[in-house]
Every structure is written in structure tokens, then in C-alpha cells.
Length: 313
Image (cartoon, rainbow, N blue to C red; front, side):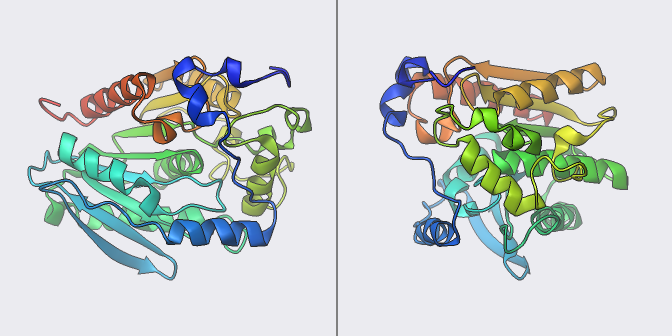
């Protein structure tokens, strides 16, 4: 991929949305504070009819938003939001979580986690782990079968989801049934590759990526970065739950996402890699009404429903 990446390389349905959409500034502290303040002012949508939402505090700066459907299927999803490890909040995905609860009958637990650099690794992952443990501890009360829980997320949340799956695997005990990863942020070495800095990656570029990884792990591309922080660093991927990895072929994380999916397959993990031609970062969230995003989300949800044995979905 060269620096000539332009609007013309995007899927035609996505060009209008991304033509002028800025990359969130995250390099300086004041920029992150401004972005966080904007997220904090968001008014989350009301859940769909029949879905309730409550918040459970799990620690200072962390917790779980619990979406419960009127007609539970017995399955659940632990969802983790994105934001490059440094911005974002669970509220940005409340609409998605509510729809999943309503459409698939899932209990959706959306993790609220602390952000870097104030809270670097392992704090964000610890917070997501706390949400996982809470979900398991309350599965019976929620009408959820522990064997029918998936872990998923988008972007940085996808990376945290993949890292949490690795950690839970190594700890033993109840394992997730699936990992559902949208454009996951998996490899700090991408940020350390400065040849990518001049490429116009839409929404999230490599300069922002470097700031995010440095905030999270200290130094992107360092000789020793824990695999729970950067899952692509993991040598042995055998024995992990089935995976769905979705990505666009013009986004910054495409190479690392494809490589991770191929390594999962090579390790014997049931893996689906869904690549959207001309798909930039997080297009399914920024342009959900487009045909390409609707079809992509439909494929993702069909895979999740099958993995969690949701009848009739």
C-alpha cells in the first residue's frame, strides 16, 4: 500500500462519509481530554422496546452496562468499545448493544474501562476481565448459559477482546464460546512501522496509532510487549474459541487483522475472515445505513447467532 491512498480507493457508498471525516486528535493530553469530554456529553439512545439497561459499578472508573432483552435466548455477549486505548466510552455503542439484545435475544454486557495513558496496560484489560467475571458470576440470574457467552469488540475494543480471550484461556475454567472482532487493534509493531505514517488511512492513521500504543504499553515496537496487550505477539494460538474477524482492505489494521486470522486458522481455530473491499476503519459504525455496512453487519450477526446457538436468528 502506498501513500497514494485516496477517497477514490474507498467503497463508493462510503466516500461521502469519509471524505472530510477527521482523524481524532489524541497525541496531546488536551486533545484527549477534549475528545473524552465530547463523548461524556453524548446522550445515549433509549434501549429498544423490551430491552432494559442498567449500570453496575465494578471499580473506580470501570463498570458494566447490562442490556437485558424481553425474550432472552440464553446467550450473552461481553462487548468492548473502541477508541485507540485513549478515548471513547461504552455509551458510543449503546445503540449497537441494544439492537443486539433486541434482535438476537442476547444479554449484552458492555464494559466501561479506564483509559491510557493515565491507566496503561494492564488496567484496561483488568477492567474488561472484571466485567467477564461479573457476567459469569451472575449468569444464572441473567438467564445465561456460561457455555454460550461470546467476547467481542471494535478497534481497540477488538484488541482488548482478543487479549481477554488469551488471558481467560490461560487461566482455565469457563471459556468463551466465540470471539467477535471488528477491525481489531492487535499489533503494536504496526505503529512502530513509520513507513505507514504518510499513508492516508481514514479515521485512524498510524500517527494516532503510535500515540495510542505508546500510551498503552509504553513503547510501541519494544522488544518485550505482553501478548495480552498486543495479541499478535502471541506465538501459540491453538485451543482458542471460534473467531470472526472483520476488516476493510484500505484500513490501517488490515494487514495485522488478516495475519491474525490466518494464524488462527493455521492453529486449528475455526475462523471466519470477512474483508470488505474499500472498507475504511469502523465503517459499520460511521455509515451504518449504507448497503455495504448493512450487509457486513448482517453477516457478522448471523455468524454470532450461529456460534451462540441462537435459534431463529
